[in-house]
Image (tube, rainbow, N blue to C red; front, side):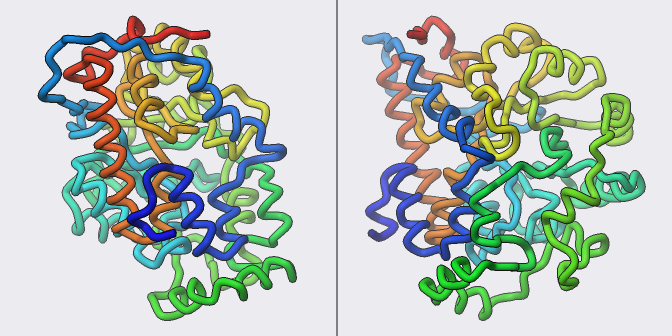
Length: 381
């Protein structure tokens, strides 16, 4: 299979599986524990049907939306994800350029492999900085100061990852940064030599947002250690309120799953929340994001911008989330598979296919703009 033969999520997934060593593919592909929530995230869309209107005159379609002060040409954005240059040597550079081409937002992670400053110089499209809450309060402040200096407009604090999820696929292969592979994991790398050649021929792997704080060259240090030792499980609402005030701008909480927490986000001055269960990678057995979306929109949708992610694989999934009241929809694996398979070309093909799907599906729904989507378009089984 080649890139031009990829037409959907599953095609990109197959191509990435063909090109990536098993441990790296499974890091992207896997979820926590039994992966029940991971599967449920996508399955939940199947219980919701679209009701199209006809003869509405839909020659011109406007997909634009504004979220947290950022004007987007399309309601689909690239969620922040870690370790991107591990999947393809272009990493965040490829994602940023592809997002700019389609006029949408993208996120850079604290565990990103290209610096905030370089990305800010590379593209003009809105950049979100995703970060974690550390035990070292000075580090939290320094990270916000650095983001502000780099021109980042939206700060996104991940609140569902105070400790790492139990990702058993990674345990079986020994995946970690630095690599501590099992024998089986090493054999899977040997079967995909082109990945290793590309990895060695390009710049050394690094985590520029954390280089001064995390020594990845030290064999005793790893991403797992970062989550275990550096992140603060005592983080509470007062801590976050202090950060919101310090940032004094667009501030979003990623990982909200209850009405009560959404209301608290409003109370402390957040301007956005992401309804998300981290793609099923944290608490297995938690509810799907889509199943929680409506009640959270009903509670706070008129007070805060609501974004949504987890399980999105189709343009129709996006339309269903928008119809329930989400302002924008994030994708993760959906762009990581094509990134891993083909770099910037892969991400651009994915975003292009998604754009075509959304235009076609909006016409079939009889809607000219995102504002015309509503729950009148939906029926739940």
